[in-house]
Image 1 (tube, helix red, strand yellow):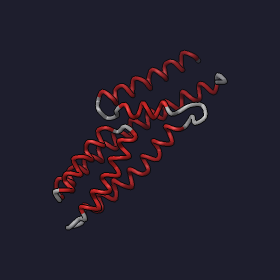
Image 2: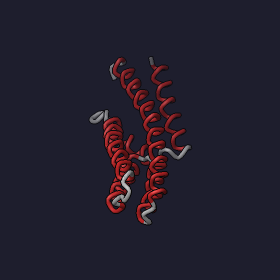
Image 3: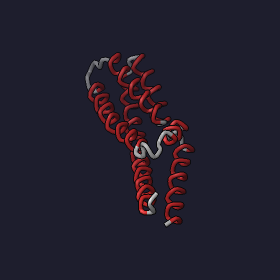
Image 4: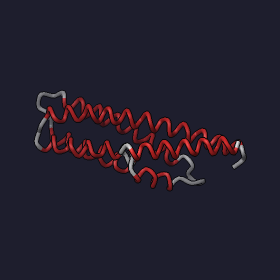
Length: 151
């Protein structure tokens, strides 16, 4: 059982290192993990889940706004700014960087640029979600093994 826990922990560390090396996550995610303890053992999972739910709504709203022949770029910029903030708070570095570029498109009212960047945001979000779903599954496995040991 100890060996299984060690293997799962190594898998988690390896996945997070890969995500950092690929620029998908930054050190902010590690800081979030440090806030998780015995008094709040599901902190990271809850933050990630809230981020996913909120992000899907924001991405769908951006898509709807950009389908308009004359989007409200000020409102779109505010929405992208919110998405950038929540992404940066989670440590989703690649998404935050795309949001910075998309805000430039909003400020110059370049709809074509914004549509292209929204596609990249969707792709980056889906990649991040897939990787963090794997992380959360490993984290659940680690917690179950620890619980089975009575820890």
